[in-house]
Image (cartoon, rainbow, N blue to C red; front, top):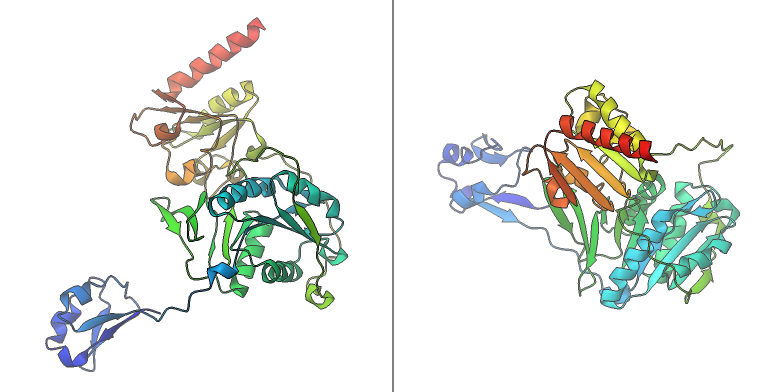
Length: 396
């Protein structure tokens, strides 16, 4: 790791040098300067220490030969024998990235009795689909699935690997990245690629205060997970690619986990499936006022959702929260009421077809992404909307 070296022979006034650190990380121990674990690497001591302190950077590992890694791979998510829609979204984004650097798009399928689904992936833009169809892969178990993903990567050597930000993907991607000692960026909200084939992985950081651009210039493959409904599903086209049936040594599919029984859970429709959402923000004064927004949502055949602040107040179930720490949605219409528009919230809804924002603050960030902005008191505007909708329905 990078560290700070102390040149003790240059340290004259030790007390004054120790006082340079605003975090009190420099100490005088047995008449010698010492840096404790509280060091933040701010380097103030280096700037003001007169040569006593020196920043030492670790030797970088040799960079990988990028010419040996080619293509963008998508790990298909198979859910109860069907392809999860996040797979199609990732293929569309992979197609877009691949066009910039003249790369092929690969797709990996893992499961049992799934070969018939492979042709459907070609229709969305995959150039080649690699199918690992084995009875041992019927259910997701981390050891055999990781072994299959590793086998695929060593076989194909893709430059980048895109994985859905689902419970399966979030378990699988970090294990595979660790095996190749490479980087992984989770919950990306945007992806781009440079001429050097380095993937530009963009996501909010530090509580949404900045947008971090993360690169992995010295390692391959590059891993990124992306949530469902961040990207759009591309239109279908005539399939032109190839399908490869792949095999793997049986001993690699051995798992310490034995699945005894599977009980089907009743599917609940979440806010991700709603075509219309009415969102409650910090501008809501009390919990009882949510009934007003619920009525508006009901008249529009929609669902009530919220920001993190409303969930933390205990006014609404966490499953109805939108944002990076909640759900990502892409409805046809979303109406935000008293929502300021923090980055972490906007990242979870800015792909909606139509965004209507109601806020008293004309400088609220939400107005930057809204298609229609209404400056005013939601306690006056929402009842007016409800009344107008009721009148229109009465005429029908």
